[in-house]
Length: 305
Ligand SMILES: [Zn+2]
Image 1 (cartoon, rainbow, N blue to C red):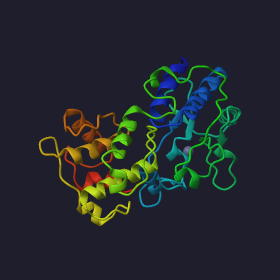
Image 2 (image 1 turned 45 degrees about the horizontal axis):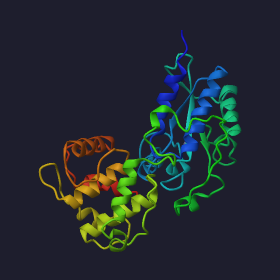
Image 3 (image 1 turned 45 degrees about the vertical axis):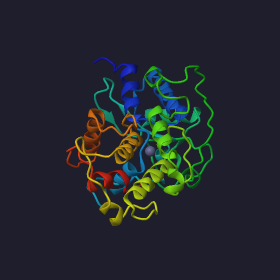
């Protein structure tokens, strides 16, 4: 049986890490994989960035939805929501299967992570979270929710800013398309009309961005602006699709899809790319992928904002 290649472990992990991660956290996580590989341990990252909505869906698992409880954190309570945490697991020698026993190899990976500046969830006193590695730079989740971000130290000792696949992302860890979405939110006097603080155009799809977009939605829908998703907001959803749409709602749709990781131009033109991204988003949420926005789609987008 031949060993899985390091590149395979790295590229699978990069895919699972997702966009919007802090650049140093991501780089350090990939360095953990490289160092462990040299010691004969195959490790892969299963999760990195999670939106509030994804976090809430995970919280529901084992509570209101089937499955085992895997987290005690709701949206905004996990450092995954701020791109500062990753989860790992080990694989078999050929990389075909995940293994989850917390053995000496598993602990060795945690030790490598700690040497690079990570805190390990296996060291926590109350809820031990063995797959979890995070870097918060000493900030609390309350501070992170309020929009503060740590300045972290790169302890990898490697010069490459990021692996080849992420060169399109600026050094901050943000993406250009999220930056464009944030620029749009800051335009047309939306911050004062929809009552939110002008967004940092950092390309990171954080909670403040979701909050601002929901407020713009409420401004468009004339529901009263409180930043909470409720029945009134749901009732204000405007039905739009490729053949029947207005530029304002389309921009809001495009910008929100950008926050969810879809690379779109916020141009108000409901073309093939927007249609494709919308359908992919709908599939990812388990709702009908009809390319039509309405109450269900907007609920999926904003309910946990
Ligand atoms: Zn975790």
